[in-house]
Length: 266
Image 1 (tube, helix red, strand yellow):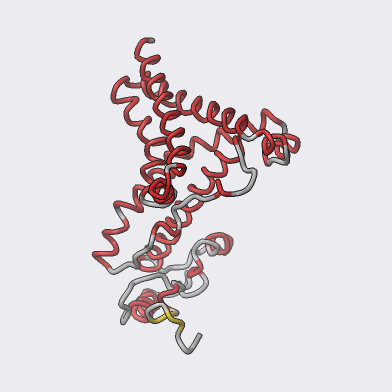
Image 2: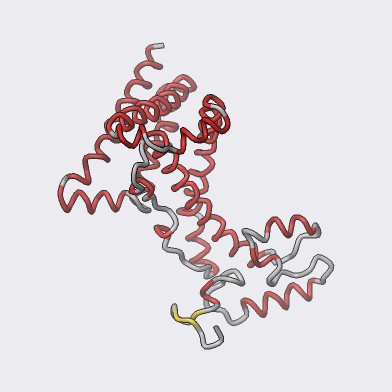
């Protein structure tokens, strides 16, 4: 019990302290605003998200095993709830006005909405692993097989806190979605290169092709038919990559531009 209280207390205090600092930093003049802006996009955002989500899940077990992990997770949840209450109280006009949480509570039920949104938090470790792969794995593919580079800050960034009257519960969960959607979209973009480069073969199930074509447009725009031959596949690879300087998926913007400018054919 002593370890549980100590680890939980230190974790909770640290999370709330840093959350307070994040509110303070942009008020520290030009330098503070510059730092705050850097912390809202990758790689600065990776440090912030890592501190609040990943670090407690690592240090808790290191110092307290399963008890430490439980204490850290509970501390994370309490930090979110405490911050939500304080932020809402600090913005009474917005809190009493139109809000996403009010409408959804009325639509599906207060406790149903509360439990459902917290269930989505179990996916955080998945998104963290995806982000780690984007940082540590994908760059090797750029170097080894000339996959396209990406300015990851164009995907991994948050700015929904600038939305007027978005406070408390609505703000914290919209920031989660803001970060998560960017991470997932960047991962999908990277996977398009992987799929089209190594396996440009259409699935033999029409419904799967239709479903996957939303995230992988090359399914119907270049991949070999399931009843085709390996000769067909090799011809596709020759056509798409034979003279390519960058080995990107078939619909990648780099194939439609020259040094960032649209070609005459477009």
